Length: 459
Image (cartoon, rainbow, N blue to C red; front, side, top):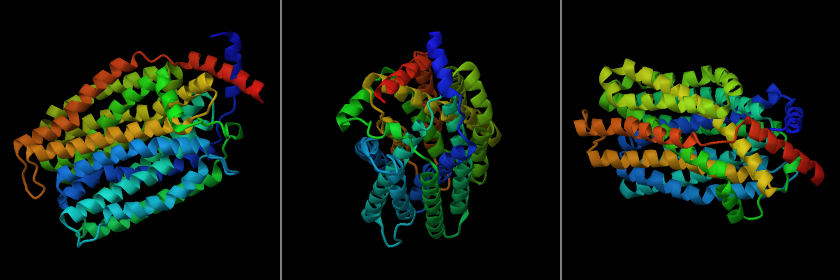
């Protein structure tokens, strides 16, 4: 990197993001994490055991919802990039989506008691599709807003580190929701109340962030000219292609362990009472270690740190296959290892994506945070949806019986392969692929220096 580029980058990076902005941006992730954690950790189990929806039907619903995301994610991303109001490009979407999220969460968790059979399956399908549409209308513009707050290579990591730190308590709140529903005498009624509480939290934090954050005027009106062109630009970006493949693998792995935890604790270990303890060991280290990850990212680089995280995940997931035989303590140790890797990814991967968007601007002259966040969001949900949907189908195939007190050994082995074996193989592939990633701090500094020159010429 030239000395001129280094100096230019340093001058653009000097200002730190105020703590008030970090908190305001991060707060919606607490509400969203609570809602998402409850859905990921318990909706399949709740639907199968409480609502008595066949597991294959719920698996199919989840996978169909991912196909629907293939339509809604890029559309919302493109429209968000092209939105032009005096309030900005992103904040009007966040405000508009808040109430529909509340309504659809209640719909998913509280279907009418008189619905049975295909009517119940239809209700759940419509509810989940509407929820996915509403949350897309929120999370894509919200994620894009974070990409715009700063150009600085390391401040971005700090921003998303704060988002994860504040989002982690939201995950724990969702875990609390799961515990209350799981142990309630009337789980359907409790689920309705908690869904309303979670939806209100999402709406309130989204409105606060939209009120507090200000968008950058220089990005207004600079989105992609059309949907197909924007999506093609995303695919042409060599850095983005590689990152999205690896992130898709990670999303599948995280979805697998998330949806299988209740089945591991109940049907394999027979210690359903320890489920929330296990998940707490998964969530709390993500919160505690984030300052360390932010520091290490600055010292060794984002790529190297994420490679470390993936290296830890492979034995962490693989160990679950045989670790369940060692009892809950060994499973807790393995899940704590996984928490470290997930925490690393949650901090550095969004920061890497923001750098990639700068590279795209240099290539195209456009600011397409919405398009990139839409692709990102779709891959995240596709990976999780494939994990949940595939889990439902595999459980059905293995002979899982939601009303049986003890499952067969075939069912238990299937649960362990879904939760541990498949993710371990996936992370091995992802680590090998990501070793080719090249957009490091020095290259990004050159990109940023050239962008600053072009922006100055344009103004």
